[in-house]
Structure formats: structure tokens, C-alpha cells
Image 1 (cartoon, rainbow, N blue to C red):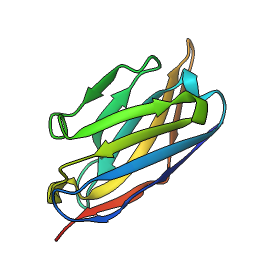
Image 2 (cartoon, rainbow, N blue to C red; image 1 turned 180 degrees about the vertical axis):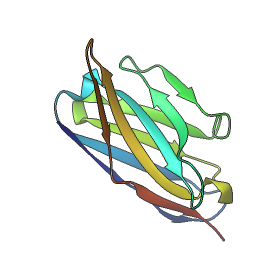
Image 3 (cartoon, helix red, strand yellow; image 1 turned 180 degrees about the horizontal axis):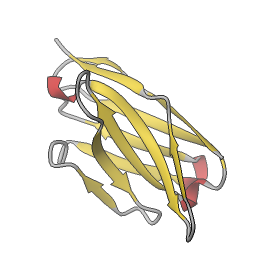
Image 4 (cartoon, one colour; image 1 turned 45 degrees about the vertical axis):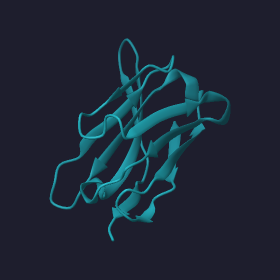
Length: 119
């Protein structure tokens, strides 16, 4: 079992920055691929970014060039640095840890942290 705890959300003005953290408790954090998703009211959950076990990254087109995902395996933590924030980035942000085994998939979610971009 792995518990994920997000933090770092809040209210920020357009053009501002926030850094979200996702701390993992439980099994060896380094074996998981880590994802960030977000969900706005009335919309489906949307994938934001991925970081692999070796640090390879991918981003949704909507955040590419503005957001940076990273991980610190020694601290069991994944980060999402969000710059040049826009009102449309307002959402609850969730981190997700996934490990695909031969016969099953481990899939864990945090409780989410609210990000509001508004003047």
C-alpha cells in the first residue's frame, strides 16, 4: 500500500507560480511512475504530466512549457512546478502512482489539492 499526500495548492493571480508536492508513504517510491491530473467543476479528470522511474517526462499540450514535473526519490516526493498560471488552470490537482506488475496493477491516488487562479 502507498499513501499519497498532496500539498502546495492555493490562490494565485494570473501569471503567478505555485509548486505542488506529493509525498508518498509506504512502499519504495522509486518503483512507481508518477502522474499529475486535474479536475475542474463539471469536467472530467484531465491528465497533466508524467514522470517515469528514470525521470523521463511528458506533458499535456495545455501545460507544456509552463509546468515542470520532477521527483526526488530520496524524499519520496513528486513535484509539479506551475508557472505562468492561467485562470483555466483552476482545478483540484491529484497525484497518482502506478506500477504495472505481470498480473495486476498498483494504482494509488492522493486526496487532491485545490489550485485557484484568479485576480
